[in-house]
Every structure is written in structure tokens, then in C-alpha cells.
Length: 371
Image (cartoon, rainbow, N blue to C red; front, side):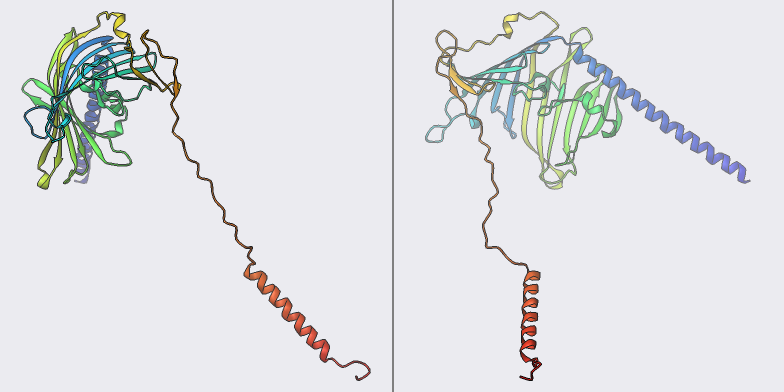
């Protein structure tokens, strides 16, 4: 009787083990597919030209607080971005009575070339402005970044991509399959906690569009009153070239959690790509940025500043930009009178007592003559 029971238990154990092993293998194969197809999507894009618009709302307002129009040109490591930002309402300057003046226009043009970042900023329609040169590190944050706006980069400040998140399998907490008719999505929950906070990313990838990210939610752990939650959705995709998909409309929302985990809308960002062209030749002149006369320049490569002259070259007057002075605090020593340890005082006292006793003894001892 015992033998059949043991055989049944063993059979169940083998079945469960096979199911779990098969599930793990299925997850591994799926993650491998996501890495391959998602990574291939960006690698297929050798050059890109895009025109798009980014609008920002603070709170539940109906009118945007700012709007940016961007022109992005990229060919390999060469990047040129021209942006024009209009500030409305709360972001625009106020007059003396506190009323809002006309919207403010800010223009920025930057060029990333040969490992250096050259930028020009102007206000309004003024031809002059301020410019800077600085060395550029691969993980340095760009103020404007098409790849972050299009969800190819998930953490803008750190430049982290989905592929980099998936490299550490121990960080993947779960992998689910979501079905909507014939449409299949995969949801990954990834631990992105660091020493300062506990956070997780919930990422939906779309099989129809080369496993590109279609939704990204960043959540604090645990979710409690006052914590922040952000969510980005790619609402529409377009096949911009055979086999190459690109998100054309995205929406980013940030919430704060109130009592009973009620979400309060803090901000909304909407990204609309108007035109996206990939793998076509870009005019080399696009990757040249000329500074107009009168522009003030700060060159962080050699810590100098100067003005651009009428001939388009730096003027003779070059000022050295002082580096931040790091104050070195030298240790101070307060001279104090030398101190004698208690042990030494005790020894001195003992010797003094011994000398006194010996002296007294010698004074009282009688002499040989009886004196």
C-alpha cells in the first residue's frame, strides 16, 4: 500500500518540477526575445531626423504651461537639436502688479560632436545670446533627448535603457502575459531600488512593435501617502521604415498619493512626433553651429570666457573663469601646559615619603659614642 503512495508523490513532484522548469525556460526565452528585438530596433536606426512637440501642464489645468518645438538630427555620434520653448501663464514673467505679461520665448541650439557639447541659448528673437563649450561624457544628461522622449531611454538622468535593466536577471520580479483579443503585451516588474529608496518599474512591451515599451510606471515602495507615482504611455506607433517602429504620441503623468491611495495629478507631459525619417543622408552642414557676433561664451574646456567678435571669432579679451576654491581645513592645535600623569605624581609622592622616613630614622638613631 505504501509503495503506490510513494510513487504518486514522486510523480507529482516530477510534474511540478517540470512545470516550473518549463516556465523558467519560457521566461528566459521571452526575455531573450525582448532583448533581441528591442535592441535591434534602435540598432537599425543609423540616422534619424525628427520634428516634434512637447507640451507641459502643471496640475489638472486645460491650457499648457509651456510648449517646446524641437528639430532633432542624429547621424551616429553626431547630434544636433534646435528647440524653441514658449512659456505661458505661471512660467512667464510677471509685471510689477503681478499680472502676466506676454509669453516668453526661449531658443536653444546644441551640437554634440567629437565628444564635445556646444550650446547656444537666446531669449526672444535676439540674435545674440550665451554659449558654452564642455566635454561630454557618454552618460551625461542632455536637456533635450529624443530617445528619452520616445521611451527608448527609461531613466533620463542615468541614461538607462530597457536592455540594461534586463541584464541583471535577479532584478526582474515578475513577467506576465496580457492578452486583448489577438493583441499580446508582456509586463515586467523590475526592482530599481538603490541605497536611498525602494522603487520598482512596471514595464509593458508590445510584441507587434518589436517589443518596444508601450507603458512605463515608476512606483515607490511601499505606496503610501505622499509618495510619487509616474506613468508614461505610448499611445500610437508608426512603421517609419520597413520593420522599424517608432512611437508617435506619448503621454506622461505624475501623481502624488493621498489618503486611501487616491491619486492627485501633479503634471502632464504630452509628446507628439510630427515627422520621423530614418536612415537617410543628412546634410553635413546640419552638424555645424555658428555663434553670432556679440555672443558671450564660457569655455569649460580651458576655463575661459570671451565675446564673439564681428568676424565670428573670439575677441582678444579672454578672461579666466576661476575654478571653485576648495577650502582645506587645517587641523589646529592648542598649546597647553604639559601635564604629568597621575602615575608619575604617585611615584614622586612615594619617593618623597620614603626620603622623609629615612631622614627621620637617621636623625633618631643613637651614635656609637652615646651622644
